[in-house]
Image 1: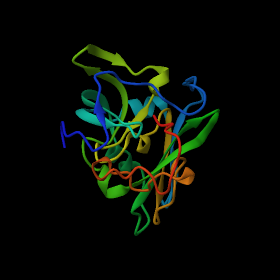
Image 2: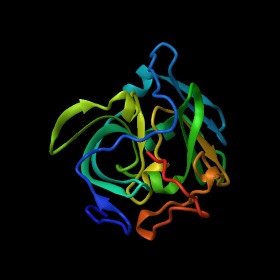
Image 3: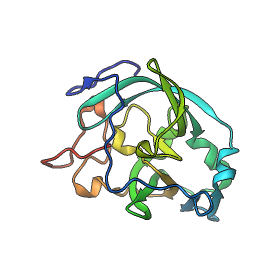
Image 4: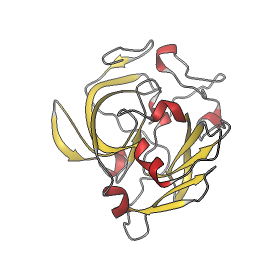
Length: 205
């Protein structure tokens, strides 16, 4: 999918900042990452435990529903699949929700995704980045520090989550934050799956 511009998109070399709600202020002492839902036993990981997980470096394309696309951003982070080592899933788990902080609520933001689409190097919880204009640097608080989920390029960027706080494993699909507000459950930019029904404003990340 690299360097394919989806319909209705324009290319930018900038990384625009859009988000819902306040910018989260990270506190390592209180931060944790929760794995829950249709699992045998829930798990909560500290920031240190998360950051000791194996790292993946991947160059990805990002497509925002507000119509911008940014190619070839390189991220370092923890692949989604690394978190599966901590939980035993119930049979027939096929979906997840990725959660993030929103206005002080650690589970205020969520995005639904199919589990089988997240097993590659392009589904990352990232903490630093670079591109042809920038050397390696931590993602900023406005970009989702300390941990932001970047989805594969086959999804619009709202399927990611700034200030990521956990993963809920599910047997059945259910809408996340923006999906509850009328946006597509599947969100494939190459099929221009922006909306489940007419929505008047773009407000995405």
